[in-house]
Image (cartoon, rainbow, N blue to C red; front, side, top):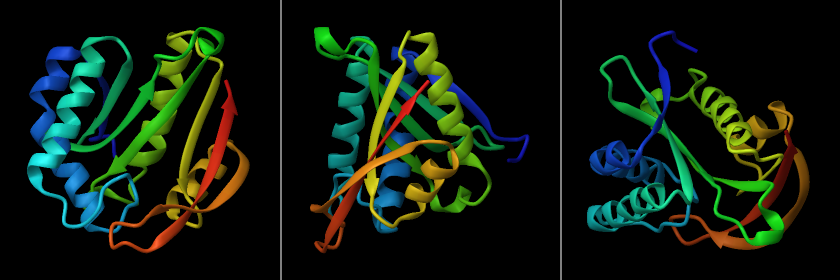
Length: 175
C-alpha cells in the first residue's frame, strides 16, 4: 500500500463532517456494481441519509467508523465496526460496509482497512467478528487471504444494484 494512504477512526464530529465524502464513496461503489444494500440509480439524498444515520450511530457509540484517506486527504475508503450487540453477544462485533472508491482499488486500501478494523475491535474488547459479502466477488477473496473463515453461502440472499440476485457468503474471525 502507498505510504500516502492513512487509516483513521472518526469521532462523532468528524463522522458528521464526512457525510458528503462518504456518500461519494458509496455512490461510486454502487455505480461500479457493489451489492452493499443499495440499488441503481442511487439518489445522492439516499446516500447522504445513510451516512447521516451512520454518523448518529457513531455519536451513540453503537459503531466505529474507519476511513482511508488518500494523498489529498480525500476519503477513498471506509469500513464500520458495529459494536452495539445484545447482552449475550457483547464479545462480538459485525464488520459492515467495507467500501473502496474504484479509483483507489488494487493499492492495498481494503487490506489496510481490514487490519485497522480488527485492531479497533480488539480495542473495544471484541473477540469474534462476523461479516457477509457477495459470493464470488473480490472482497470474498480478500477476506479469505486475511484469515477469515467461511461459514457458508446463502443463495439468492440479496440483489445486485442492477436487480440480479446474488448469493452471500458469511465469514467469521476469532481475534
